Amino acid sequence: MNKMAVIGDSETVLPYKAFGFMTFSTTSAECDGIIRKLMSDEEYRIIFIMEEYAEALRDVLKELRASERTFPIVIEVPGIRGSKGNGQEKIKKIVERAVGMDIFSKED
Image (cartoon, rainbow, N blue to C red; front, side, top):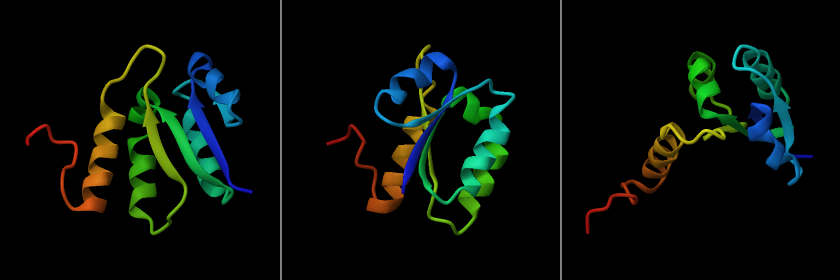
């Protein structure tokens, strides 16, 4: 069975639980062990992680992207206090690489 997980503080992960996501309420100091555990579990396909937690895990996330594995896909989401823009920028780069151009550009 394919699973999706959310890692963040309790305020951020709570709404995701209502939609059936596996939620991991933690601190940024503890999220390293959690994301490594989720990455080794082949049932997890998508992992959403709070932007500020992802900043503390840059090396781990870089290691995942460098591997040849397709899953899990890690997506940064804003916390309850708002977005830092990191997640949006990463999605923009992924789409640009897949499509071959920047479709989010405001130029006509």
